[in-house]
Amino acid sequence: MEEYILRDGLVVPKVGFGTFGLNGAVGVNTLVSALHCGYRLLDTAFNYENEGAVGMAMKKSGLPRTEILVASKLPGRHHRYEEALTTIQESLYRTGLDYFDLYYLHWPNPQEDLYVESWAALLAAQKFGLIRSVAVCNFLPEHLARLEKETGVLPVINQIELHPYFNQASQRAYNAEKNILTQAWSPLGRASDLMKNPVLQDLATKYQRSVGQIILRWEVQLGVLPIPKASHLKRQQENLQLFDFHLAPADMERINDLTRSNGRLKNQDPAVYQEF
Image (cartoon, rainbow, N blue to C red; front, side, top):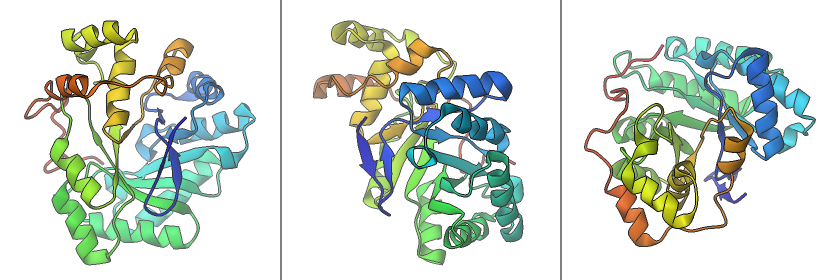
Protein backbone atom coordinates (compact mmCIF):
# COMPACT_ATOMS: atom_id res chain seq x y z
CA MET A 1 0.00 0.00 0.00
CA GLU A 2 1.29 3.42 -0.94
CA GLU A 3 0.48 6.44 1.21
CA TYR A 4 -0.26 10.15 1.18
CA ILE A 5 1.07 12.54 3.81
CA LEU A 6 -1.52 15.17 4.67
CA ARG A 7 -0.68 18.80 5.32
CA ASP A 8 -0.85 18.24 9.08
CA GLY A 9 1.44 15.20 8.92
CA LEU A 10 -1.19 12.46 9.15
CA VAL A 11 -0.23 9.51 6.94
CA VAL A 12 -3.13 7.89 5.10
CA PRO A 13 -3.28 4.97 2.65
CA LYS A 14 -3.97 5.76 -1.01
CA VAL A 15 -7.08 3.54 -0.94
CA GLY A 16 -9.66 3.44 1.84
CA PHE A 17 -12.79 1.40 2.44
CA GLY A 18 -16.31 2.83 2.21
CA THR A 19 -18.83 1.51 4.72
CA PHE A 20 -22.17 2.97 3.60
CA GLY A 21 -24.85 0.27 3.86
CA LEU A 22 -22.72 -2.06 5.96
CA ASN A 23 -24.81 -2.47 9.10
CA GLY A 24 -25.43 -5.10 11.76
CA ALA A 25 -23.74 -8.49 11.92
CA VAL A 26 -23.43 -8.79 8.13
CA GLY A 27 -21.77 -5.39 8.01
CA VAL A 28 -19.38 -6.31 10.81
CA ASN A 29 -18.33 -9.49 8.98
CA THR A 30 -17.76 -7.54 5.75
CA LEU A 31 -15.67 -4.96 7.58
CA VAL A 32 -13.58 -7.60 9.35
CA SER A 33 -12.93 -9.19 5.96
CA ALA A 34 -11.82 -5.82 4.56
CA LEU A 35 -9.45 -5.24 7.46
CA HIS A 36 -7.97 -8.71 7.03
CA CYS A 37 -7.47 -7.95 3.32
CA GLY A 38 -5.31 -4.98 4.24
CA TYR A 39 -7.59 -1.93 4.31
CA ARG A 40 -6.52 0.48 7.01
CA LEU A 41 -8.84 3.44 6.49
CA LEU A 42 -12.54 2.96 7.28
CA ASP A 43 -14.92 5.71 6.18
CA THR A 44 -18.20 5.95 8.08
CA ALA A 45 -20.64 8.73 9.06
CA PHE A 46 -23.19 9.52 11.74
CA ASN A 47 -25.92 9.23 9.09
CA TYR A 48 -24.78 5.78 7.95
CA GLU A 49 -25.97 4.46 11.32
CA ASN A 50 -23.14 1.93 11.38
CA GLU A 51 -20.51 3.53 13.58
CA GLY A 52 -21.16 0.74 16.08
CA ALA A 53 -20.55 -1.89 13.41
CA VAL A 54 -17.25 -0.21 12.53
CA GLY A 55 -16.16 -0.25 16.17
CA MET A 56 -17.14 -3.89 16.59
CA ALA A 57 -15.31 -4.89 13.41
CA MET A 58 -12.16 -3.23 14.69
CA LYS A 59 -12.38 -5.26 17.90
CA LYS A 60 -13.06 -8.51 16.06
CA SER A 61 -10.25 -7.94 13.59
CA GLY A 62 -7.63 -8.32 16.32
CA LEU A 63 -5.65 -5.41 14.87
CA PRO A 64 -4.18 -2.73 17.12
CA ARG A 65 -6.15 0.52 17.21
CA THR A 66 -3.05 2.40 16.09
CA GLU A 67 -2.99 0.50 12.78
CA ILE A 68 -6.49 1.55 11.72
CA LEU A 69 -7.61 5.02 10.65
CA VAL A 70 -11.29 5.74 11.29
CA ALA A 71 -13.18 8.62 9.69
CA SER A 72 -16.70 9.79 10.49
CA LYS A 73 -18.88 12.75 9.51
CA LEU A 74 -21.17 15.32 11.09
CA PRO A 75 -24.75 15.47 9.72
CA GLY A 76 -26.32 18.75 8.67
CA ARG A 77 -28.96 18.69 11.41
CA HIS A 78 -26.23 19.07 14.03
CA HIS A 79 -24.31 22.02 12.60
CA ARG A 80 -24.92 24.20 15.68
CA TYR A 81 -21.73 24.46 17.74
CA GLU A 82 -22.86 22.70 20.92
CA GLU A 83 -24.83 20.07 18.96
CA ALA A 84 -21.77 19.37 16.85
CA LEU A 85 -19.58 18.75 19.89
CA THR A 86 -22.20 16.46 21.43
CA THR A 87 -22.61 14.54 18.17
CA ILE A 88 -18.87 13.93 17.88
CA GLN A 89 -18.86 12.56 21.41
CA GLU A 90 -21.89 10.38 20.65
CA SER A 91 -20.16 9.00 17.56
CA LEU A 92 -17.14 8.06 19.65
CA TYR A 93 -19.37 6.31 22.19
CA ARG A 94 -20.97 4.34 19.37
CA THR A 95 -17.65 3.21 17.98
CA GLY A 96 -16.15 2.61 21.41
CA LEU A 97 -13.15 4.74 20.42
CA ASP A 98 -11.38 7.53 22.27
CA TYR A 99 -10.72 9.58 19.13
CA PHE A 100 -11.34 9.74 15.39
CA ASP A 101 -8.38 9.94 13.06
CA LEU A 102 -10.44 12.04 10.65
CA TYR A 103 -13.73 13.84 11.13
CA TYR A 104 -15.63 15.63 8.36
CA LEU A 105 -18.44 18.07 7.83
CA HIS A 106 -20.61 15.86 5.63
CA TRP A 107 -22.15 18.66 3.52
CA PRO A 108 -21.98 22.47 3.70
CA ASN A 109 -25.79 22.90 3.63
CA PRO A 110 -25.42 26.53 2.45
CA GLN A 111 -29.10 27.38 2.88
CA GLU A 112 -28.73 26.94 6.66
CA ASP A 113 -25.38 28.72 6.50
CA LEU A 114 -24.03 27.11 9.66
CA TYR A 115 -20.98 25.35 8.26
CA VAL A 116 -18.52 27.90 9.66
CA GLU A 117 -20.03 27.39 13.11
CA SER A 118 -19.78 23.62 12.82
CA TRP A 119 -16.24 23.93 11.50
CA ALA A 120 -15.33 25.85 14.65
CA ALA A 121 -16.76 22.96 16.67
CA LEU A 122 -14.54 20.48 14.80
CA LEU A 123 -11.51 22.63 15.53
CA ALA A 124 -12.46 22.70 19.20
CA ALA A 125 -12.93 18.92 19.26
CA GLN A 126 -9.47 18.59 17.71
CA LYS A 127 -7.99 20.68 20.53
CA PHE A 128 -9.81 18.48 23.06
CA GLY A 129 -8.15 15.40 21.52
CA LEU A 130 -11.35 13.90 20.08
CA ILE A 131 -10.16 14.29 16.47
CA ARG A 132 -6.69 14.02 14.98
CA SER A 133 -7.38 15.68 11.62
CA VAL A 134 -10.29 17.84 10.44
CA ALA A 135 -11.79 17.49 6.98
CA VAL A 136 -14.85 18.24 4.86
CA CYS A 137 -16.98 16.59 2.21
CA ASN A 138 -18.59 18.21 -0.81
CA PHE A 139 -17.18 21.69 -0.23
CA LEU A 140 -16.96 23.96 -3.28
CA PRO A 141 -14.18 26.56 -3.62
CA GLU A 142 -16.42 29.29 -2.23
CA HIS A 143 -17.14 27.23 0.89
CA LEU A 144 -13.46 26.49 1.43
CA ALA A 145 -12.49 30.12 0.87
CA ARG A 146 -14.95 31.17 3.55
CA LEU A 147 -13.54 28.68 6.05
CA GLU A 148 -10.08 30.04 5.41
CA LYS A 149 -11.19 33.68 5.68
CA GLU A 150 -13.26 33.29 8.86
CA THR A 151 -11.27 30.67 10.79
CA GLY A 152 -7.81 30.67 9.20
CA VAL A 153 -7.92 26.86 9.01
CA LEU A 154 -8.52 24.74 5.92
CA PRO A 155 -9.34 21.02 5.93
CA VAL A 156 -6.67 18.46 5.11
CA ILE A 157 -9.12 16.48 2.93
CA ASN A 158 -12.10 17.39 0.78
CA GLN A 159 -14.14 14.28 -0.04
CA ILE A 160 -16.18 14.79 -3.21
CA GLU A 161 -18.13 12.81 -5.79
CA LEU A 162 -15.53 11.72 -8.34
CA HIS A 163 -15.55 9.04 -11.04
CA PRO A 164 -14.83 8.87 -14.79
CA TYR A 165 -18.14 10.53 -15.65
CA PHE A 166 -17.30 13.43 -13.31
CA ASN A 167 -13.57 13.91 -12.90
CA GLN A 168 -13.85 17.21 -10.99
CA ALA A 169 -10.78 18.71 -12.68
CA SER A 170 -11.37 22.30 -11.50
CA GLN A 171 -12.21 21.28 -7.93
CA ARG A 172 -9.16 19.01 -7.79
CA ALA A 173 -6.98 21.87 -9.00
CA TYR A 174 -8.35 24.20 -6.31
CA ASN A 175 -7.85 21.56 -3.61
CA ALA A 176 -4.28 20.98 -4.76
CA GLU A 177 -3.56 24.73 -4.75
CA LYS A 178 -4.66 24.83 -1.11
CA ASN A 179 -2.75 21.63 -0.23
CA ILE A 180 -6.01 19.77 0.41
CA LEU A 181 -6.08 16.09 -0.56
CA THR A 182 -9.01 15.14 -2.79
CA GLN A 183 -10.87 12.03 -1.71
CA ALA A 184 -13.42 10.30 -3.95
CA TRP A 185 -16.81 9.02 -2.87
CA SER A 186 -18.68 6.84 -5.35
CA PRO A 187 -15.30 6.24 -7.03
CA LEU A 188 -16.77 3.41 -9.13
CA GLY A 189 -19.87 5.31 -10.16
CA ARG A 190 -22.43 3.68 -7.86
CA ALA A 191 -25.16 1.90 -9.85
CA SER A 192 -24.43 3.67 -13.15
CA ASP A 193 -23.46 1.99 -16.40
CA LEU A 194 -19.82 2.89 -15.80
CA MET A 195 -18.65 -0.71 -15.50
CA LYS A 196 -19.99 -1.41 -18.99
CA ASN A 197 -18.39 1.60 -20.63
CA PRO A 198 -16.58 0.41 -23.79
CA VAL A 199 -13.52 2.62 -23.25
CA LEU A 200 -13.02 1.25 -19.74
CA GLN A 201 -13.67 -2.30 -20.90
CA ASP A 202 -11.09 -1.86 -23.66
CA LEU A 203 -8.53 -0.63 -21.14
CA ALA A 204 -9.34 -3.51 -18.81
CA THR A 205 -8.55 -5.92 -21.63
CA LYS A 206 -5.36 -4.05 -22.54
CA TYR A 207 -4.00 -4.12 -18.99
CA GLN A 208 -5.55 -7.48 -18.08
CA ARG A 209 -7.32 -5.95 -15.10
CA SER A 210 -10.92 -5.51 -14.01
CA VAL A 211 -12.78 -2.33 -14.97
CA GLY A 212 -12.88 -1.44 -11.28
CA GLN A 213 -9.09 -1.68 -11.02
CA ILE A 214 -8.68 0.54 -14.08
CA ILE A 215 -10.93 3.21 -12.55
CA LEU A 216 -9.27 3.10 -9.14
CA ARG A 217 -5.79 3.19 -10.68
CA TRP A 218 -6.84 6.24 -12.73
CA GLU A 219 -7.95 7.97 -9.54
CA VAL A 220 -4.74 7.15 -7.69
CA GLN A 221 -2.69 8.50 -10.60
CA LEU A 222 -4.75 11.70 -10.43
CA GLY A 223 -3.55 12.06 -6.84
CA VAL A 224 -6.96 11.16 -5.45
CA LEU A 225 -7.81 8.85 -2.53
CA PRO A 226 -10.74 6.59 -3.51
CA ILE A 227 -12.85 4.80 -0.90
CA PRO A 228 -14.56 1.92 -2.73
CA LYS A 229 -16.96 -0.38 -0.92
CA ALA A 230 -17.00 -4.09 -1.68
CA SER A 231 -18.91 -6.86 0.05
CA HIS A 232 -17.22 -9.84 -1.59
CA LEU A 233 -13.72 -10.97 -0.69
CA LYS A 234 -12.50 -11.17 -4.30
CA ARG A 235 -13.56 -7.60 -5.03
CA GLN A 236 -12.06 -6.36 -1.77
CA GLN A 237 -8.76 -7.91 -2.77
CA GLU A 238 -8.93 -6.61 -6.35
CA ASN A 239 -9.55 -3.04 -5.21
CA LEU A 240 -6.25 -3.05 -3.33
CA GLN A 241 -4.20 -4.54 -6.17
CA LEU A 242 -3.47 -1.22 -7.86
CA PHE A 243 0.21 -0.63 -7.25
CA ASP A 244 1.86 -3.09 -9.60
CA PHE A 245 0.76 -1.45 -12.86
CA HIS A 246 0.58 2.04 -14.35
CA LEU A 247 -1.80 3.61 -16.86
CA ALA A 248 -0.08 5.31 -19.77
CA PRO A 249 -0.67 9.10 -20.11
CA ALA A 250 -2.73 8.57 -23.27
CA ASP A 251 -4.96 6.09 -21.45
CA MET A 252 -5.38 8.50 -18.55
CA GLU A 253 -6.65 11.03 -21.09
CA ARG A 254 -9.04 8.52 -22.61
CA ILE A 255 -10.64 8.14 -19.21
CA ASN A 256 -10.62 11.89 -18.57
CA ASP A 257 -12.43 12.37 -21.87
CA LEU A 258 -15.39 10.44 -20.43
CA THR A 259 -16.20 13.24 -18.01
CA ARG A 260 -19.41 15.19 -18.47
CA SER A 261 -20.17 18.83 -17.69
CA ASN A 262 -22.63 17.70 -15.04
CA GLY A 263 -21.84 14.07 -14.43
CA ARG A 264 -23.23 13.93 -10.92
CA LEU A 265 -25.09 10.65 -10.58
CA LYS A 266 -27.81 11.84 -8.19
CA ASN A 267 -27.78 15.57 -8.94
CA GLN A 268 -26.25 16.27 -5.53
CA ASP A 269 -24.82 19.71 -6.21
CA PRO A 270 -23.25 21.11 -3.00
CA ALA A 271 -24.31 24.61 -4.02
CA VAL A 272 -27.95 23.68 -3.34
CA TYR A 273 -28.10 20.12 -1.98
CA GLN A 274 -29.24 19.77 1.63
CA GLU A 275 -28.31 16.83 3.84
CA PHE A 276 -29.59 16.48 7.39
